[in-house]
Figure 1 (cartoon, rainbow, N blue to C red):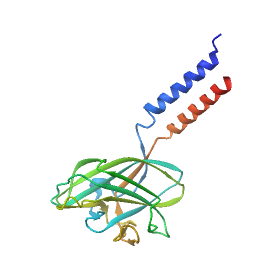
Figure 2: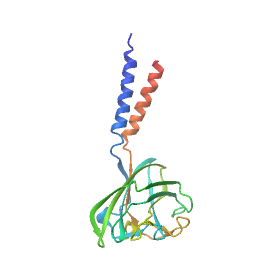
Figure 3: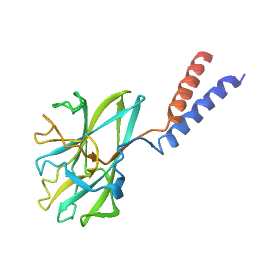
Figure 4: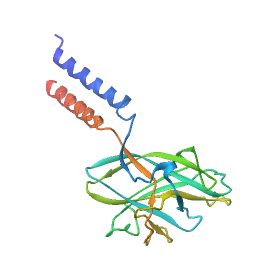
Length: 219
């Protein structure tokens, strides 16, 4: 005899898993915007490039526990304005009383040249402004200050240094001249956005888990 309840459970689990794989990760949503204005809101750029001897970091805090799945930001290449292959590193530092905690970051990612880079069509001070994005995975605790540091090492490109797009009208960004060991406040705002997997993904995960648990019980 065919167990119709068992078959329905199998179908539900398969359907939920299919939706989870095909749609729930397709469209990340912005969960934090540092409000520097994107390509058109920039009025400066700060070096965040070991080639120039300094790196930048800026603060973010989320109200609920979140999975950061993508970061978007802007930047420029000063010199010949002729970018070559990028060499990005992304650090996330803990907070130490309103500045990044010096030393080892809580998380590090090394996408190198494997980032999405597109010319935004906007110029600043005669330089092309580029938009970037990269996918990663970081679980941010709620109501906890973190510091994001985006670094592009252009040592192999002697003609350009990389600048993180910045709005100098307000903010709390910091810079380091010793690769993050110590920091000093500048007081501007770097341009970045944090994106997460949409909320329906968690519901689908629960659906899959529930359906599989029911299958085990029926068997």
